[in-house]
Length: 120
Length: 120
DNA sequence: AGAAATACCTTGTATTGCAATATATGTTTA
DNA sequence: TAAACATATATTGCAATACAAGGTATTTCT
Image 1: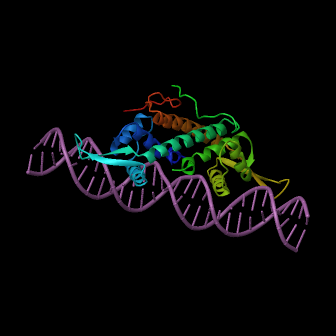
Image 2 (image 1 turned 120 degrees about the horizontal axis):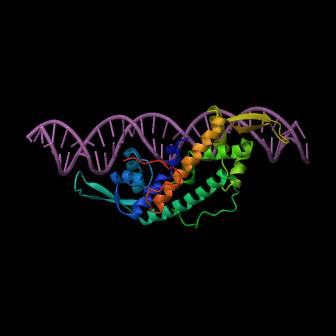
């Protein structure tokens, strides 16, 4: 049981959320994720994921010149990608609810996690 | 991206939490998880997981007669299992914080659980 | 005896995070 | 000029794990 395993299938949604917020390029995403609290991600994780998401038409990419270094491939969400992000957020909310139900021994009928505000 | 993928590495912790709460047998766990809000789980998921956790000495098992059907293998947490559960709960808390940070575009500086200092 | 429900286990497959490695571009420094 | 370094993308192979499919054994009910 490791953090790596717990991330499976969740990282996609995180990337979609970041890309929706602002056009980003792959190499940038590791730092971006770190700023959100994650440990930095391997490029061997991020690039294959981006290529897969592009193949699935969730994102599009455009090459742009960099101020320093080779060209960057910037990613944007497609309409399909936005839809996928919405579904991810719903599934993520359900997962949080259910796991917290288990951990704190509550029944699954009450406690809706959907519409609460995030407190700091 | 599916719910299946999002469960990877999380189901172990859920089973540990359920077993800690009350001695249970494998076949019972599918229903148990459903009562907590999950869709029911395949036995092909649960049994290998229980065997693995026993091999790792996180749980112990004892066979008991059933009122109807073959004997049931009841599982209990070991001390090591309780420790593992605690670590899971911490990792799960961190994961929730970080993913919610990403989804709602907050910075990761105010960690809810970790209290760990982030270097660099 | 036969059928159905209960209960456990094994095998093979698909998915995915990641280390290791490769390749290419631009800047800085000796 | 060349060497060194940082930036940036991509590929390969491995490990972990949820799960469908299939199998075995026990008890109860007709």
